[in-house]
Length: 261
Image (cartoon, rainbow, N blue to C red; front, side, top):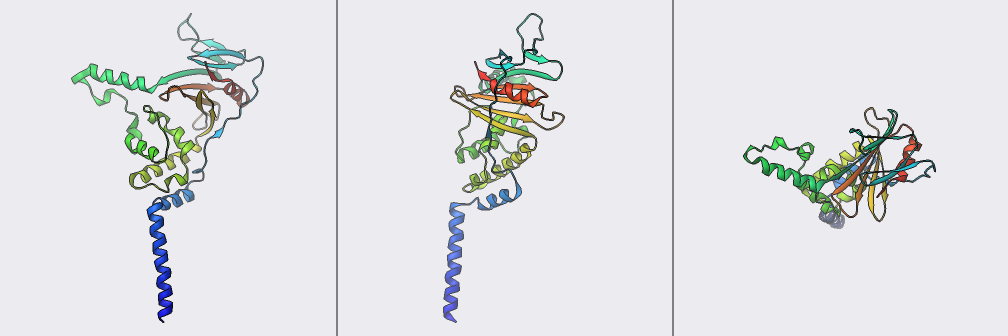
């Protein structure tokens, strides 16, 4: 009877040792198995946007440092008569405009505003972007640092969706511990929800990284696109080109023409 007991004890000891090794080196394995089972899109990353040929009759324009080409019947519009166009449109169905946001400058302006108000300042006076997140900014930054993603210093609350869609995969949780695993699960759920609300592609070159988003939720029905351009020269800045166009072929032609000035 001793021999079977010895063999059984050896096997049990091996299994315990193996389990300890897995726990030590891959503490996130249970989390990995959970997200692999629960989320169909957990391992999807952002595919490259395939540029299309641009018709020769499309006309070149520039808004806020972004160049693009649009059909010749799109006309410039401005809220103030006699000033440069701030958008271009064709009827009520097609329109393009550009926003240029520097998150560092925004935060500095908020700090100046807070200092100006002094004792009259209230937290309600400023919009706090992290109010709708489950965890604090420091928690998300710590998580992304653990998985090797270099983040901009400012504006993460507005841009984190792109890092989540492009960098978050199941295997990234294998070595995570503590709150980092909780943050991973939160972002994994966000990623799965986002896939059903928008399609996303990426354009990457020596000057910038851009994320092309086709909005699908609500009443948009795929006719609204955002091109979010992050210049390599300023990680805290983003140019957002918003395009409303009912024809997907035309929309992709316009997006293919977009570049920084």
